Amino acid sequence: MIFENIVLFGSLVAMAAAKRRAIGDMNVSPSKGMRRQPNQFYIVKLTAGLEVIWLQKSPGNDAFFHTLQVDINDNAFLAGEGVLCATRRRRSVEDNSVMINQDSRFPRRVIIRAVDESTPESRNSFLLLLQSYMLRPEINRYNAEYIVNDHSDLTDENNLESLDHYVLNNDIVETIYGMFENTDPSWYANNRDIANQFFTGPVYPRIAIESLGFPDDVVVDNGGGFNDNFNPAPVGDRNDESD
Image (tube, rainbow, N blue to C red; front, side):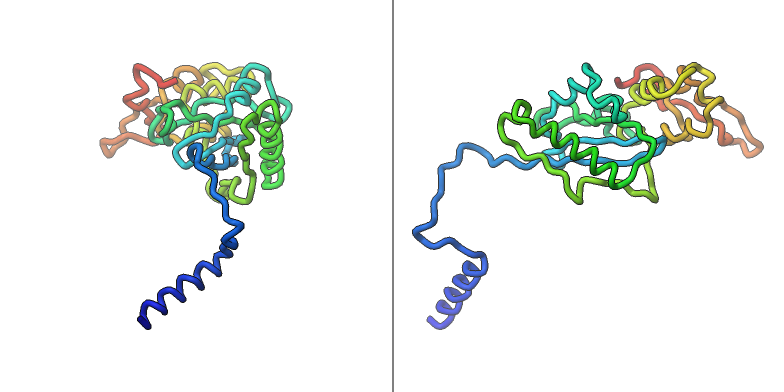
């Protein structure tokens, strides 16, 4: 009996600490489905004066922002803010295939943005701009939450990644076409200082080799191996490029 009283007392103390409502103030409505999770904006500063942004509802799934994608890609929305496109997201730097939402199996997306300077303040301001768009009544018809907070900026200033961590090889080449003039097979040779900020290397995809002149040299050194200029395309890129 003493033990039971101790357990009961402990339970009451725990409930009191949790600020339980008074009995008459409690009210539970029958569930009409899963409670919606808030949608979180994320942004990362990359090399080459670029940023990528995505909108996530859970670790394996994007939030729905189709209207924003259409306005960016079809209506040049936020072009004045450096927004280049909204495109399919890549699985990883090693895997040039499309990252897929776990619940819907649709492609995940990222927004690519070019900037002259990327600071914590500028990145936060841009996310707030996107948040204000998503909260418009005509866009946010279901009163979803769109969060920008201290967790939104995933930038590691000491370890900036290149675009091929997030974007398909085809779309990286299209990004270079859109950002620079004179984009032909001599582009790599004329822009070595920035070219390697788009692809991690030292192995380059076939589309970058053929379109922009990224190196694909095979030179045997005295040790019987290959020197630093040997950059064959990955096997999966030799015939078909995931687009």
